[in-house]
View (cartoon, rainbow, N blue to C red):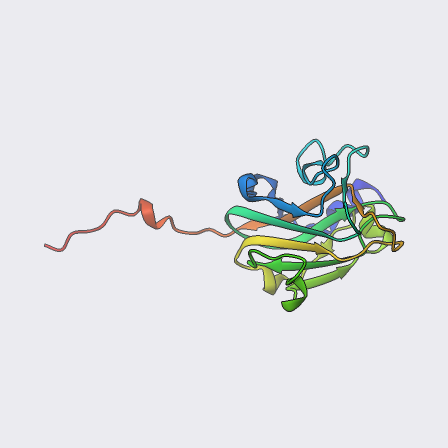
Length: 177
């Protein structure tokens, strides 16, 4: 699959939301200390096929990504190998403080079962109505393609647009006369 094929699945007004991630709040539970989330999420690292995010104790990963402004999420790219790449990916919009103990208590905003094409870079188009005013995204990688103990993620990219909002702090109060 060429880069041109994968780009066509992303609409013109959708952008890579990398610049809108609040990096100070990003978390990943069960990541290997030597193969952390930045390998799959950060610009430059995620383009290097030799770098991966890897799970540690078992195959599951729980990723929390806050944004520095409200966004609309259109699609997600999750790349990995056909053997140990992610399989079932559950997405939760605006759901904070989730852990492995309570992730199954909440219905996901959307669920994707990744195909070999998805693992090579074909975007998963989401239920757009569920991702209109997103301040944070939790990604739960439930299992991998082969059922092995370690899940490896080569790249995560989020595509969408920003929500034009009014900065209420920037407005001046008009005095009654």
